[in-house]
Length: 322
Image (cartoon, rainbow, N blue to C red; front, side, top):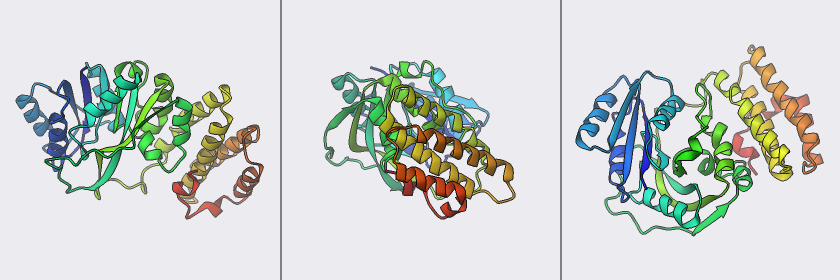
């Protein structure tokens, strides 16, 4: 089974080799590594080409800068594998990751598998001899359970594109929305629904490196976040159509608070965007009222917040995960 590993690359000359080496040293060797140079202005493009010259499994795409979604989509279009995996250019993999995820897919007859991750500093070095694998086994869940976990403290594990293996046909009609914030969260419910059954293990085989130079949430324009709203509404519409009231309540609740959190981050002078976010929060609250699983007490609390939305200032997304 061939696996296509897609890595968006942008100005990563300081860490790209660590990521690429960890992929090319995987115990599962039937793979192609697609490096998508997304308009880098440093030596990243030349480094990608150097890897391609040394290893025939490496394919390089050079394109104008379009962001991680555009880079991933270019990689998906070029992929020839039976399965697809993703990695960020500043992360790295345990060399057993791809083999482990593929085994989860094949042994459980599923088309999507998830593994755990560890947070590592930017100067972390992959272990020459990985520690014995620590895992509490594997569970197979349905898409409704998967979507519900997007509203829990484990949401990062379930929403990010990396640390997962997808059968190629899951992307036949799915692409990451471009110029949109939280693009992974925009499509994960669609991928889970298509997969129907997902194998989940908490074995920490992916290493997410914290980059102090990455763009913080503060200062990012609000328009990309607003462009993600229709995807969240699509998720809620699917849950309502399938009468998954309990899961819908969790999704509605988190979406409501996130809309007001984003509004609280905007300056008072930005009345247009603040109005859009407030209007969508009010619409979500109205929709929640017709959900038989919704808590009346929670609905009343949310109404009070709508009456005085600035009370949410200082809160975080984590405060509303259940």
